Length: 156
View (cartoon, rainbow, N blue to C red):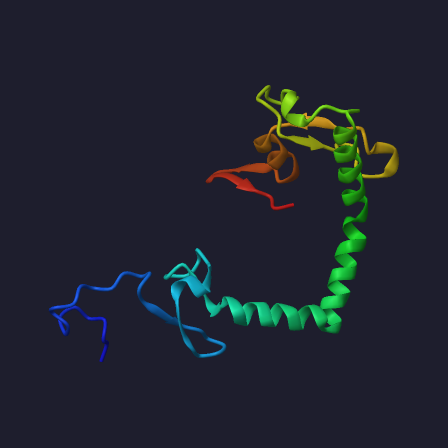
């Protein structure tokens, strides 16, 4: 028997989603909807596990051998990218470069928001940057392809 059915409780207003509780799949406790992360792919728009259980899992994973390995690989893989971005940021702070928003996008002419490194992130190309708007920057890194059904992102 469901308690939240309005027909069983005629004198009580139906509860909104904010008032209702959701059961965590991990700890099996009933918690308010605010205790769950947003997951737009689910019917109720919330994750199956509560925030505290997800944080606990993440903490355990980061301490595990696989978590350490993945974090090391990510840091190693992105090291040049981080260094190049940091160099551009420091040059802007020091006054050697203007922020991207003071330029127009080199592709479409709108106001730029990002600096793009078209030649890569190696040390000799740290300052070889072009000002691009957000839409063009996304298209550069994740281009569309035309299909008979419309445009499709490559996801690269």
